[in-house]
Length: 109
Image 1 (cartoon, rainbow, N blue to C red):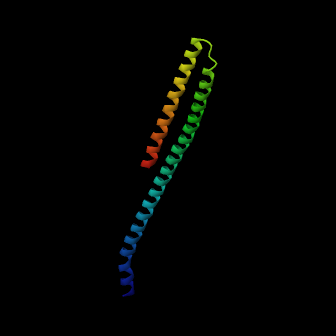
Image 2: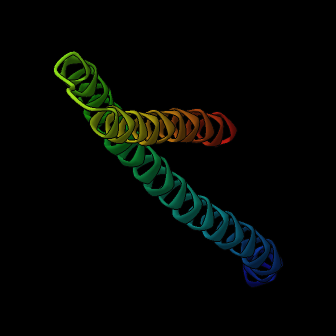
Image 3: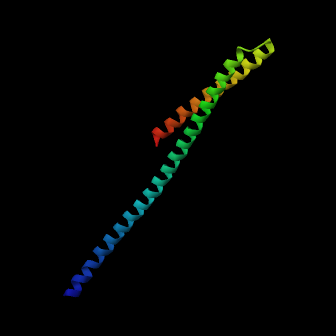
């Protein structure tokens, strides 16, 4: 009789073991996905830091070019400074746009 009771628990134990193993596999899968997301977020944060450094660099360049414009002696120099300033402004705008894009990526993570 005791053997029959023990035997009747065997299918239940197998079912519970399978359920437990399935749950452990899901947890492992979620942990992998979580690690991947954390790595992606860190990559985006690093890109933001790099873009902020570029923004500072471009802003400093624009200020430097503005100071130089006062010392311009020829129209050719003025045109060259204007072109440099326009390029720096475009780079600054692109870096700002990239920050906005990266922020949106972070919001969606």
